[in-house]
Amino acid sequence: MANVDTWLIAAKDLPKRVSGPTFVRRQFNTGTTIAQNDVIRLLQIPKNWVVMWAKLSHNGTLGASATAQLRRQTTALTIATTAGGASHVSSAATLPDEPNTTDGTDYLNILAGGAAWGTSALMTVEVLMEPVFPGWEV
Image (cartoon, rainbow, N blue to C red):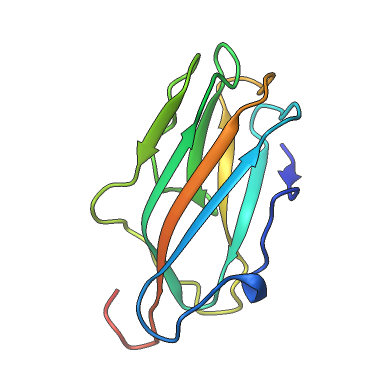
């Protein structure tokens, strides 16, 4: 298992609002072989931010048994996509997300599951995040 940072956006480079939600949409072509259980880090979640909603889709097969799952660190935000073809999955209506209150080193990532990704596919990730300040309800 390795971290793949090819498509990573650092927290300092994310568009942010002082209050209220921020929507981020990322599209990229996998274009390379990704090993099973590799973690593709997409963006660094800023300190004191929570993920409110998330969606992951790909326009074609990643491989016969290959799947993708959107996560915050190791916490699943979506179920895994369907193997063998185009697929999309969305998060539940309410996510059990907790803000990182220390240093903002949490990452929104995709776990390559099932098998290695052997084909190129267009991945689309959409996420709605919001700052939560200490003492506020999550």
